[in-house]
Image 1 (tube, rainbow, N blue to C red):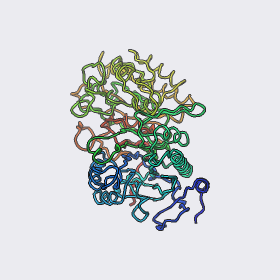
Image 2 (cartoon, rainbow, N blue to C red):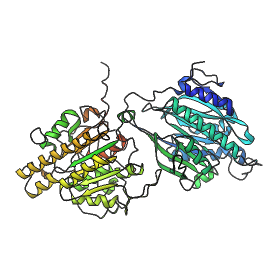
Image 3 (cartoon, helix red, strand yellow):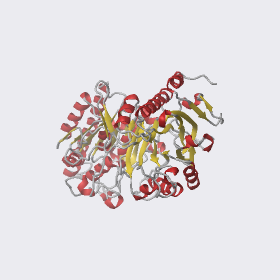
Length: 621
């Protein structure tokens, strides 16, 4: 037997005191053995080295109502048999686009029918492990996941009888990220009060989660199951572990001890450790689900930040929008700060805005929402008109980078020298912001602090004061001086060049403020771009700068870092074919850099694959 780590020794010590037994099944040791766990099952090393893409997947839990319940004489007699119900259940799985699921009451005929109908899926346990084990099966789509370890642990069921429960270590085929998945069905009160057995099961599961985390901190853990408890499950498990519910909810640390699971509270749960972000939580109990089972279908989208983003450790992002600054004016003589950044950081002078408009306000909203403008393209609808809110322009609420950062429990701020930015404050302010359904309810006000003024100097001074004292996780700074000067005089005029030089100096001052504050120095990403060029549409000049500075960001051309995007040269771009790097990709660059999920409903960089961290490795000659 291999030497065990301290964390795994703790697990085996727990087995002696609680009756927990571990059963391992691996490629290297196909014969399962009680009380043995391969050291490889918990070693770190989770992903493809340097991977810059987050791992996203759809996870579900579903009690499918066991085959025996609907057999003649069963307590659910009169419903369709288990095989037929499994046909409906697979339709639910496909419709939800689930690629990982924990099943309960998954009896052999249902196991076999699912395997027949879903040929690309793998199931653990298998028939070899016995009927008790397969009652709580974990399934995964093998086009998405590959099993690295398949194991069992023991937990009490009816009358305290110990039964096997599955857990697996899966490797994502695209990113290499390793995760652990545990599944359970804790006993109901069918044969009397089973609370003590549910409590014991939960302690065993919590201990296993904690040991896996200690042994491999870079491997998230998911726990799915029918817990047959609501608050009595959520509150203890979030106290004992760093698990959080995909449905939300809050709990305080001792001595606070407050606990408030999200409402409505089910007995079916998806839990994940703190390095997982959940979005799109769904409790589906429509006609198809009701035909399939007497439980709802619970699912959510889980996201794990890329290894590159985790290693970078970005804690603050400052996005600077210089209105009226096309790439053609970026030079050592006219914009020395931007030129120095371009020479040292990741940059391109051929980024593009939206196809529909080149004016500032529509492109600003696209930068913050990762959407095009035209509503028919899932756009935000803000064109040259000045709507009262973005939601009114779009015909529905539009989430932004402010939403994602705020709802994750972090702070945001807006500082603009363009009075049109009041639209942003209204749209994501306390009156019109959406309800926060992620974790703790932080309210509808998505923008924590900010100043909108007609002078850039006032806005930047306020931003620098905040950065020097109480920096927010996301800061949006907007300067309108160059664009205003181009309107008042002309592009390229002396007044314009003075405004351009002034904006460049303000960028330098922002960088100095960041570097002077120990809480922002070394942990802040700065992104500089332009929402408009101040050039007439007939000029044919479309390019704007996009410069990224921050932890782990190399000096590189952004197109070389991102071969999935195409440098358009001097040609105008459309939304067809391979896309150029667009400023509307920035919002999801912000979220991915802060290790947060993509903006719901967004269109640009929605896979968070715009890379600013990892230099591609050249293929061998």
